[in-house]
Image 1 (tube, helix red, strand yellow):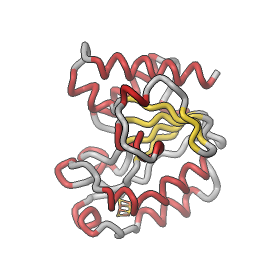
Image 2 (cartoon, helix red, strand yellow):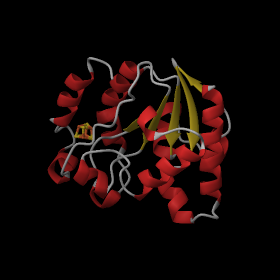
Image 3 (cartoon, rainbow, N blue to C red):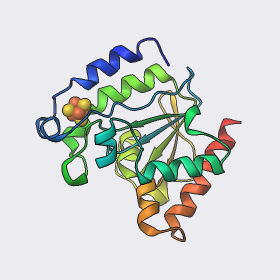
Length: 188
Ligand code: SF4
């Protein structure tokens, strides 16, 4: 973990910039840094859900359990990777973050990535993919290639919650599995 990480955690944890989110959240979910710097791999999702909001940690609910399982299938483990979100506070009723909330929280994720210096980023779901690509796109367009965004290499894939929603035989599950295998190959 970078030495400046704890100070950034303290700063994010006391943020009240989004009035509604600050009033309704239980905990700010700052994210898990990778154990090493530069990080090999960092995942970026959309926002905390109910279980993450209660625990104060990212991807601890069903989506997180699926991510752990798919990581293991690709020969990696959660302990080796960083896990962050575009916004750090749970939107009420798990609604999509508003553009204003994404913009307000943007500097925090920028600073987290600058500290972790990831070799590869996997953007989970369209909110995260749009955060990096700077435009709305579809996952069909964005998947399957390594995007060079400034200093970063970014792979786009589905959010694990989409894979859960469509079930084990659904296209998002197969795509997520393929894309994590792609990420593992990129790291070799
Ligand atoms: S989502 Fe980000 S910017 Fe908004 S209150 Fe939470 S930490 Fe602050």
